[in-house]
Length: 462
Image 1 (tube, rainbow, N blue to C red):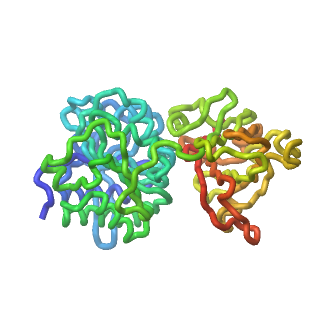
Image 2: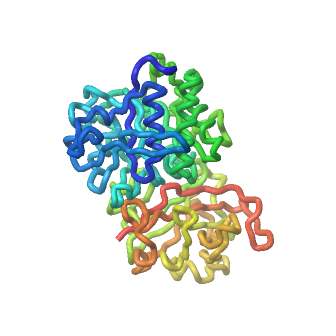
Image 3: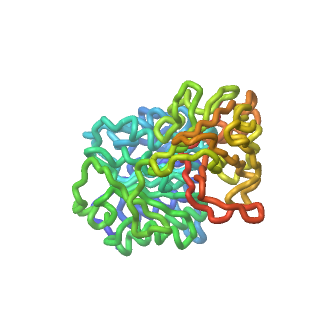
């Protein structure tokens, strides 16, 4: 028995393993009455099992199949390739099918209401090599770059089945998705490592099953329940006022009327009822800064900003700024800076990436201690010692800002594989532990707290 009385249009774009997408589209169209928007495109050169967008004719759009136990699934899925990024980023803020093309025209004939972009991910981007090469799309930047453009208002839910794209530190990055006269209402995804594959397919099957049986439950509750069964690190952002959005209200046009949303709620396993999302740095700002003074943040540090990042032989600095008067640093304070590579399971030898300025590594005349003291292999978890390198920072003077000058090694890109977003050489992340937020017991950290992450990181590029 179907749970809906009218069609919601959905589209799934897959950059990596598509088993979760095949199951979601198959079950949502058969059990929920969703309409696969990609099926509305004209037939492609491969016949009835293929589709073609006239403005992206080389994007593979065709029927894909998979099996889960004794059950078979088939769905039309799109697989973006290298060269599609700009077109897709101009489309996904107001996605629609219009005749034979992908269109962002608010008056397009067939607007999409539920959009899915799946693959590897972090920092608001999604990427993968399913097409045979490394394709990517900067989802968050698409909403930032097109913030002034009109939308159809039909897109209400964005699902990003990828790692690390919906954790609480990314609220500022996703806000433009919601802060618009025609806002998105829900963003669903993961705050840490998403298994995808066969596990992801089971999650999607459970998700759709819940929605079909209990269409008046909040969609976020269905998302939580489906993922907790498989121990997946689910997360969601909701526009304030849309946190109870359910399928029944959606298909019956009973959703609350929202516009230019300024407040978000964040949901995860620790906060299943949602908490106010932090949309600005509250205590400390931790940033990579380029040699020309460009501060890398959540809005300018993606694939669409090729001139921003860390480059072989270039100088820069790490800037740590206290944002509250009572958090200012005092001479002799000790804090910790951690550097690691996304994903955090990748090995890291910081000496292959950068070297801090020699003046920071010599005893400072006012403290008798070096400002930067390498403690390689120290991490907040002993099992991460090969993946994280740390620096004990001794504050040289009373200040609200610490700046640590460095130079990227001239051969850094040769030392780190080009397996980051869009063929970059990885995203390097920073964590900062303020004075008084730590202690060391038997060589390891204890009482871990007071941690402030530079969630944007910085991409190492050629």
